[in-house]
Structures are given as C-alpha cells and as structure tokens.
Length: 380
Ligand SMILES: NC(=O)c1ccc[n+]([C@@H]2O[C@H](COP(=O)([O-])OP(=O)(O)OC[C@H]3O[C@@H](n4cnc5c(N)ncnc54)[C@H](O)[C@@H]3O)[C@@H](O)[C@H]2O)c1
Image (tube, rainbow, N blue to C red; front, top):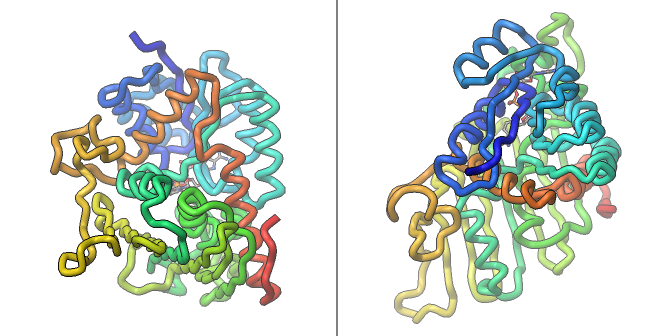
C-alpha cells in the first residue's frame, strides 16, 4: 500500500486545475510510491478557494500561502500562482523542508531563479518545474529517438509558439485575469510565458544553447491597468523571435507571439538531422512526424506515427488505454506528477529541476538582453 503524501496547492486557476486533476488521477493509472492527499488549497479570494476545495475534494482552504508552509502535515507545496510570487513561496517552502512542484517560468529572471536553486539544493528537497510538454508521449519519444542516435548529427532545431489573444487594445494589463500583460507580475511577455517551454524542450532534446540573437516587439504600447484603471506603458514583449547556436553546433530558430491571428496555442517544433527529421505539433499532440532518409527510395516520405502503441515502446502509453486510443494535454501533468513522486520517494529532484529551469531562465534573459541591444548575447 502506497504511503500518503499531503499536498498544499497554492493557486486555484488554470494550472491549479491541471495539477489537482493530476493528483486525483495519478495513483489510479501509475504504480506510484505515494498516494497524494489533497489537504489544502490557497488562493486570493476566500469564496473561490472554498468553492475550489469543495469541487476538487481539498480538505481545507486558505488565503495566506504562509499558512500552507507553516502546516507540519504538508509534504509537498505546489506553486500555481503568477510568476512574481514563485520565488518567495519556493524559498520559504524549501526552508520548511517541503518538496516543491513549481510552475514555469521558474522566476522573473535568472538572478531570482538562482536564489531558488540555492534554497532547494541547500535544503535537499525534491523539486520539479512544470515544463509539462516534455511529457507528451510523442515529445518524449522524440527525445528517445535522438538519444538512440537515429537522427545522426543535428543541423537545425526550430520551434514556434503562436497565440492571438492580446491583439485588441482593449485587453487590460494586470489584475487577476490579465497579470500576464503586466511586466511586474510576469517578468516578460511571450519570452518567459511561451518561449520558455520551447527552450526547455529544445535544450532537453538538443543540448545547451550558447548564444542568441533576438528581436522583440510590443505592438500595443499602453494599456489600462485592470486594478487601477490608469493607462500605463506596457513592459512586456508581445512577440519575440530569436535565432541561436547550440553547443553541438546546430542552429536554432524560435518564434513566439500573441499576435498570430487564428492561432490559440500552436506549439510546433522540427528537428533536422543528417539521417532523419522529426516534426511535432501540439494540435495533433499524439502524433510524431518522422522522415528517414535511410528508407528505400520509392517508399521514402514523412511518416505519421500515432504514439499510442505501448507494444511499440511508446512512452507512458502502457499506463492508459489500449493501443490506438490517444490521451491529451491533461495527461502530461499526470505523467509529471507520476515521475515526480517516483523521484521524491528516492529523495531526488525530478527533471526539469529548479537547476534545469535556471538554465532556461538564463536563455530567456539573454534573449531579452539581445533584443534590447540588437547584438549577439552569450548565454552564461
Ligand atoms: N505549464 C504550463 O503550460 C502553464 C500554463 C499556464 C500557466 N502556467 C504557469 O502557471 C502559473 C499560474 O498560471 P495560471 O494560468 O494558473 O494563473 P491563473 O491566473 O489562472 O491563477 C492564478 C492563481 O494564483 C492565485 N494567487 C495569485 N497571487 C497569489 C498570492 N499572492 N497568494 C496566493 N495565491 C495567489 C490566484 O488566486 C489564482 O488562483 C504561472 O506561473 C504560469 O506561467 C503554466
């Protein structure tokens, strides 16, 4: 019988729901060493926290995250709040010896992220940052194919993350619903919000990024603040495009925007190697596109692999349904929690760790610095 693990969730918004769903499901599908118990949920508005607790089955609720940390019966603190609140909670949780699950981006910038890494490493607490796309089975399969050397030398890595929800000048900045447009709450715009995902996946697949050259744009320069009603300058990047070099000599090309009319959340990547290429698209997330130059000429072409066949060794799929039946976005968080619990039982951090997320944050910082100066920037 698995031991219980008491969860304190901070933030009951979008990510609060995905994480709660994962804690609820994980021990039904995975042989995990712990059975999560939803002990307390914390958020800004008491009535909302209470309603969330009742809907998801949390035993209690509160509005002060310090109360979650102070509770002796909480084993894991799960941070699902806006980016500017991550650091304070994570450092306090580490000092209290709690295991930590933290949403991405780890922090507002790499200086803040470095302090968080120091805190979790000093306290030796298991930790993970929620770059969940690594755990889409097709994306994990891509990693395995690269590790097996099937692509040969890699020449190109390109990724896009496209949305269109901030095109109207009437969208405010700040406040509960639009904190992502307020630089004080978000740290940056699409760079930290969307490109951080692409950078995490890319460096996992293809190794470290060593230098970047970037361009950003803020299309709407002023927006009303949702809380004060005052029109204020916009400090985030609405769009960012950068190219880079990876340590292995390959070239990278990344683009993200919230101004790509028609796209809600289109994350795609393509990797071109000497022997083969891979392509993936979030809108078709259970498929991996594969081109192998070694195929016989008359049959050579792009294959669309339906990544649902555990007999064929497709990652995570043996835990779900029968081959041919797909899973989706929500399950990436179940995989994340399953892997985290397995690592936590050994007292280990689970990739992507706080340290891994610091490396991503350093690339984001370099991208923003390059966009300002118009020059190449080395990633330290
Ligand atoms: N992994 C992913 O794909 C992904 C997707 C979306 C968001 N995120 C990240 O998750 C985090 C949360 O984003 P979201 O979309 O869930 O936000 P959200 O706006 O939906 O929810 C934020 C929650 O934080 C709570 N909160 C805010 N300040 C607080 C404070 N000081 N103390 C306690 N609670 C506080 C609010 O009450 C709310 O419940 C962000 O860091 C974001 O970048 C990650």
